[in-house]
Image (cartoon, rainbow, N blue to C red; front, side, top):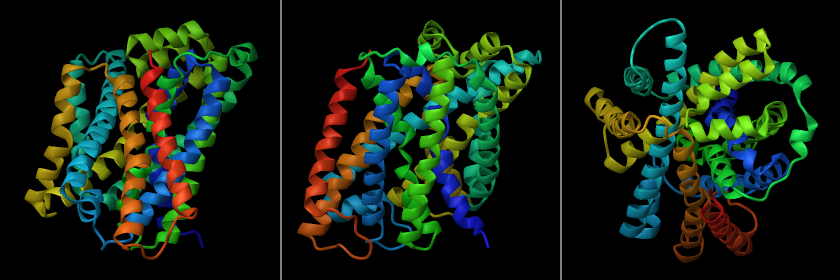
Length: 395
C-alpha cells in the first residue's frame, strides 16, 4: 500500500525545488546557452545531493526538534552559531523575498485583467497574509496542501511540455555562450537548495534517516528532470532576445506568461500557463517558510502556543514583506543572492560541521555519508570553486 506520508515527504522536497526556478532558470540561462546550462545544472544537482546528505547525517546526531542553530552551537560553539544565523536568515529571507515578489507581480497582473484595481503593494500584502495563516496552522496542513499543489503542478507541467514542444526551434538550443554562467549557476544552486527543510522532514518522519535519505534522492530527481525539460521547451520556443528582455525587465512571472501567450498563441497553453506560473511560486514558498519558521523556533526557543505562533509568523514574514514593498521587482536578484548563500549553507558549512563532529568531537552515530575525509575535502573545494564562479562570472 502506498504510504501517503512518504509521498508527502517527497513532494515537500519536490515542491521546495520546483518553483521559481522554473521561471528563473530559462531566463537566466539565455546568456549561457541551453547546453552549457544543462551541464552545469547536472553537476550542481550531484553536489547538492551530497551536501544534503551531510546535513541529514549531522541532524540525526541530536534529539528530535533540533535545527541548524542548535547543531552549529553544539559542534562549533558561539562563533559557529552566529555564522549559521547569518547564513540561514539571509538565505531564507532572500528566497521568501523572491517568491513574494514573483507572486505579487503575477497576481497583480491577473487582478488587473479582471479590472480589479488594487495596488501591487496591497496584492503583495494579501498574499503574505495567506502564507501567514498557513504557517500558523503548522507542518501537517502545509504537507496536505503541498501534496495537492505539487501533483497539480506536475500534471499541468506535463501538458505544457506536450503543447509547447512542437514549437521548439532546435537552432535556439544549439547556441552556446560562455558568459554569465555564474548568474545561471547561482540561480540553479537556489533551485536545489532544498536542504533547509531536511531538519523539519527528519522530525516529521520520527528520526528515520534511511527513509529521509531516499526522500531526498527521489524528491530532488523529479525537479532535475522537470528543469531539463522546461529549459528545453522555453529556450527552444522563445527567441533569445525575448528571454533577455524578460530578464532585464525584472517582472519575470508576468512577462514570461505574456511572452508565451504572444509567441505561441495556443489558447489551451495560455490558460494552463496562467495556472502553472503562480503554482511555481506557491509550492517553494511553503517549504522555505516552514524551514525558516522552524529555524526561529529552535534558535529563539519560541513555544508553539498561540502567542508563540504569532511571534514565529511575524519574524518569518515581516522583514521580507518590507523589502519586497520597497523593491517589488527583486525576483531574480533575490534568487541569485540566495544561490550564493546556498553554496555556503549546503556545501561549505556542512563539511566543517561534519569534520568537527566526526573527527574532533566523536559525535558521529547512526547514518554516515560514504567517502570519509577524502570526499569531505572534495566537497569543500567544490563549494569554494562554485562560490568563485558565481561571484566572478556574473552580469
